[in-house]
Length: 259
Image (cartoon, rainbow, N blue to C red; front, side, top):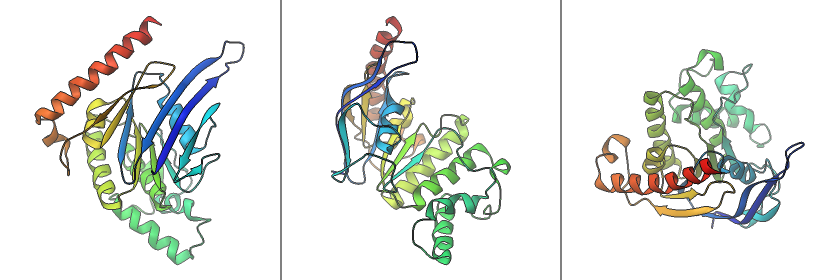
């Protein structure tokens, strides 16, 4: 098993306020080369869990293991892509991508070759010398994906990476991600609010409850691969999954609203 999270609890203590239970008895498993998405109502703890897997935070109870090793801090075995554009603005595309290779032990020539491979993989060949402020939002996220992949992590963690993009760019980025995943076969754990996005991308989808976040349902996506959104949306199985997932989320959103 690639990733195993068992009985995860995360409790926050706001200054001057009462404790807030973000995650409660949360369990999740992701297998080798799987693409797994997490969806749920706003504030249910999706991003909090991803930060725990990344080692940016620690659970109050329970444990997270990657290939049997306990996650206690950030590591090269986990690459992270955030929703915001987290590139270094003073570095070029190639410098941003190569940043994660400083401690790789590769020679400068080896670093350059590997960085170029992933720049080409995400379709940014020719933009190696551009700075982030010279790129569109979609292009910046391509750089972020290349930077995460260049370290060859065991798991790619993605926290709503396309949430800030317009609809057309988002569709292009979804298809790019599918293409990269099919080529690289890296394990992906993907957080999104977009049900359709989760269906097209994923092998399995975890639906979370309203806070405190727990697993409400695990849904297998039985659509054939390779996939594209334009083809999948006309498949009756896509429509059935969409109705099922929206129903699960709607009931939890109503709980959150009442609370």
